[in-house]
Each structure stands twice: as structure tokens, then as C-alpha cells.
Image (cartoon, rainbow, N blue to C red; front, side, top):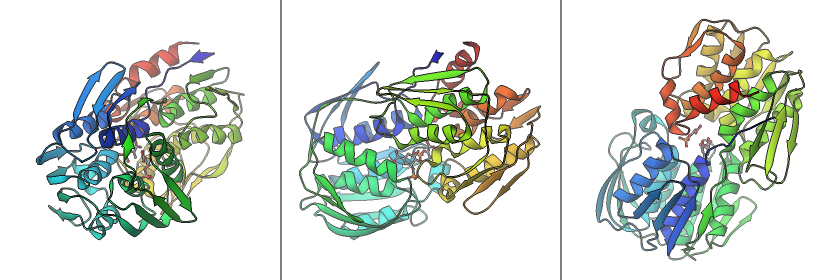
Length: 411
Ligand SMILES: O=C(O)C1=C[C@@H](OP(=O)(O)O)[C@@H](O)[C@H](O)C1
Ligand SMILES: C=C(OP(=O)(O)O)C(=O)O
């Protein structure tokens, strides 16, 4: 059995950075993810005037409950949607003038429901280009709070940003949600807000957040469950193999651990313990129809092993994967077809037929880390797979290729 240590969760690290920056006191984050997304977040905080000290294995953040220390700042959010959506929301609670911009792809990704909600709360927010997209100018003068309605049907990150803003408002926030994708990510947000001292409760479709502020603490970041999916899939795909990921067990915050339930339905042997998860191949991989609305970051992982299943794999309710680092439904279909696999797609679904992928093929990554990491799993049983941009894994896992190669070579 191979044991793999997976780096820290991107989602947990990003939330922890926000909460630490907003808290009273100094927070230490243990085992934060060190990657383009989270370094971009930390550098964004530093540009806003927060004191962030990064040591190997521990990041220290001095909280500023009144908001950014800088009166003006230019913040580049790189390719990270958590950075691009959470940081302008944090800055809105302070006093100053801040400009936010992001990569070309992040400029294309939507944030209109979030900017509309912030304006509804009285935030003076202007778009430098297209409405509902980066770049943004935030003229911050504190947020009074109140009630708002939000459509989070395209991204749960709008709701997460506003929930985390709630304790920093003068009167608290009531957020009523009309639609919501990726709901388990909101559960991560609620759990982490509470562990930094916030009071938040849910009544039906309404989240009520009290104006408590946050308290600093020492916080341990759990391993990234989406990253773990590549190793779980690789074990399920190869007869005789198994993998154990420590630090992700029944108490894990991240919904993406439920990817192992998909592998179990396909025939893998799965054991979720108190503090570790193990996946073993049984030599069988069945087709299935599965909704991935809650865990759509693992859609490419499943698509990449789908041809090896005995029957059709149909993945449903994943429309929002079209507005991620690339259009992931199209990118998966394009690359599977290059490998000779029959694929059909619709607005929010993909169907992958059984077949034997055949190289040599260069995978078109579209700069998307998950396309690389997913098709690296396909490559385990497909000679001749290469990538046009293998380095784009740096977004969430700069060391992916080395760690994955070691995993492949360790029996
Ligand atoms: O809140 C988060 O940390 C995330 C939420 C999800 O996004 P959407 O809510 O946009 O689906 C997920 O895809 C992303 O990788 C991280
Ligand atoms: C969609 C992703 O990232 P984000 O939305 O945080 O940029 C991802 O990591 O797959």
C-alpha cells in the first residue's frame, strides 16, 4: 500500500487567509498550501497592507479588524478565483481605494452577482472594463450590513465571500440564496468562520451572520481533497494498486472527498477512516451516471478514467465547469476525442464511451491545472501522452509531476 502526503487545501488556505486578516490578533496557519493561487492571495493581502510572514510549514498573519492598512493598493489576483472574489470583498469592509485585476482567463470568469450584491450593500465599486468582471475599483468606506438576495447558481464563491464579510459589517448580514452550486464549499466556509469566532446560522435559504468580528487562532490546514482525487483515481485504475491519503477522513471539511464514493460505485474498494482514506483497485471499473454539482472540480478526474470503465460514464449537472480555468467540459471532450474515445456533451453534461485511449497525443491543457493532473492518470494506461503546458499545475500543486511519478514508481 502506498501512502501519499497531499499538500494543503487551496480552499481552506484561502479562507484561512481571509479570516486571519480580518481577525483580532495574530493567526498562525500550519501546513498552508504553497502554490500560485495561495501565494497570490498572501501577496494580495500584503499589497493591501496586512503583515504576512511566510515560513516553511507556517504562515503568520497579523489581523486588522478595521480593514486593510494601505490607503491605496493595486492588487493582482493572478488566476485564482478565490483571490479574485474574496479579496475585493474583504477590502470593501475597510477604508481606502483599491484596484483589483487578474489574469486574462480570470478577467473572463464571472463575478457579476457578487459585485451587484456589494453595490447593494452601499459599496462604491466600479468596473475598469466589462460589468461583472475584473478589473475592479473598490472605494471602501466600511459596510453597514443588512439583507440581500444572491444568485449563487454559477459559483458558490460569491456566497462564501459575502458570508465571510458578514461579521465585519456594523449590523450583520442576512443573505437569501435563490440558487447555489458547489454547496459543500459553503459548509467549509461556515465551519471555518465559526472556528474563528463568528456566529452564523442558516434558516432555510437564508444565512444570518452576526456582526461579531473574528478572533485569531492557530489553524491547521487539511490536505487538498481535489488534489487527492488524482491519486485515488490512479489507484482505482490499476489492478493490484492501492493508496492511502492521511489527514483526510470522516472529519474532513472538504466535500470533494466524496469523489471516493464515485469510485466505490464504479467498483473500487474504499475505506474512509477517522483520519485517512484508502482506495484499492478491485480490478473492476463499472460505468455509471453521476451528478457532480457538489464536487465539480473532480469532473475532469472522472472523465479521464471513464474510457477504462466497462460501461458508459455520464456526468450530469456540471454547467459551471464551463467557467473555470477553461471550459472543462469542452477540454475533456476534445482531449478524449484526440485519444480516440467517443464522447458527447451537452450544456451541463458529458457522456464518455468505453474504449482504449491511444497515443501519441499531446493534451491541450488550456492552461488548466486539472486537465494536466487528470490526463496524467489516463497516461498511466496510455503510452505517448504529453502536455502542451505541464507547468500550469503550479496553480494548486507545483510539485505534482515529481510526486505523481514517485507514486507511479512505488509499488
Ligand atoms: O470556494 C472555493 O474554495 C471553491 C469553490 C468551487 O467553485 P464554484 O463555487 O465556483 O463552483 C471550486 O470549484 C473551487 O475550486 C474552489
Ligand atoms: C475552479 C478552480 O479554482 P478557482 O475557481 O478557485 O480558480 C479549481 O481549482 O479547479
